[in-house]
Length: 162
Image 1 (tube, helix red, strand yellow):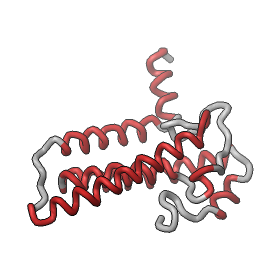
Image 2: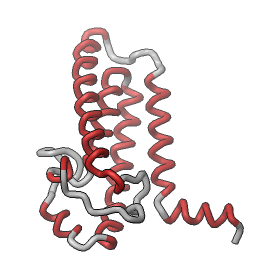
Image 3: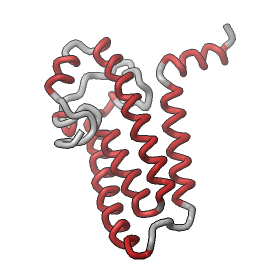
Image 4: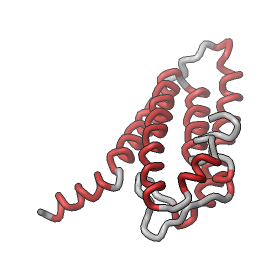
């Protein structure tokens, strides 16, 4: 096996295709933000205010989640070597708060800009829902007690919502 094919196999095994998919959608969302606003003038200001509020809330949640993860952070579906099960910070309330924060962030900014970006943000949320299911299988296999944590922490992304 060549070095390149070995790296490709490792990338796929770690869940790299999920990562590539999410970054492709993020790039599409960012490109849609560059388009002229698509909302009617009658609702544009209200959607801007709501969108910015959601985006700031999402950014705060994502930063809190990232800081709580410490060395256990990864963009892949497999936990990093030396990673630990995290149940502090927002992880006391939801199992995947970084995705929840990302959903609020991207949906909020998209709400302020365009329908096209909002549709792509919904696709990103669906991808993160599927990716988180794969991650949870990995976490159950790697960390004793994760299944109990999963059952105890019923919300996946956002406290009190989902």
